Length: 284
Image 1 (cartoon, rainbow, N blue to C red):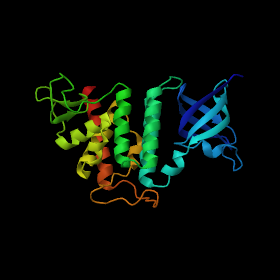
Image 2 (image 1 turned 180 degrees about the vertical axis):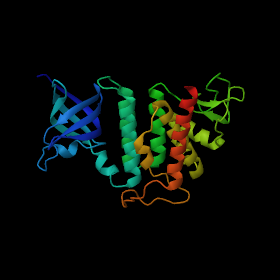
Image 3 (image 1 turned 60 degrees about the vertical axis):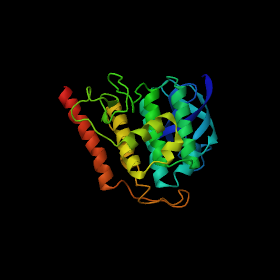
Image 4 (image 1 turned 90 degrees about the horizontal axis):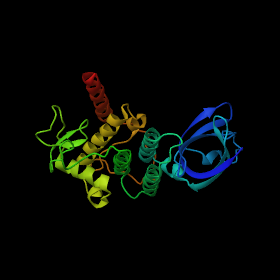
């Protein structure tokens, strides 16, 4: 059977039989592929630890009738090990991996999504920016690559020059007073400026933002993502969205915080999903 080699990032794994795993990879050349890692759940596996979520690997596989099989795997970057040491980075990375899985199709090359995920995981593992900001920047850019770029300045409907205060998920971002649908949100101007900076990669503005604007921006970014995916990204429910102004984080390489989302945070996500469901019923 023909062999092939590619580099990829492990998106997720699932058990198969007593000792095997099905590994979903987002690769540089082939796009998303599902392969079988035989015996990787055994303690003496040659490369079991290399095929864990958020690991970047060079894999060699041979093509099978239904699923391909991994014959060799070499670690290129062990981001998964670093990110798993802290609850905040771990859950944020999990949300990015799930989003990448949802936005890509099997065997459809998507180099932009691959490079975007690679850069986001590296940035988070190296602690270059706040994990929440990295996550939101990734979500917005991944949507833009998929063809759903939000507007945070001009009107998303008619193109009228902004800035505009109203924000509407179904319209694709900010809307002018003429186009504004009933029920549109009115986020703070600083929040829209932050989201625009994250989308453009302006980290000077993003890093200087205040906690309340980051939280509001996170809610909008998550809602925008889930609106276009038409169902929730489950990992987002677990992301730690603590206010950096109210609770300064300790060094993320030192402590593990098992605390899940607060009741307030979980309620915000549930409201977004409820609004989405209500809108779909109304359209039907």
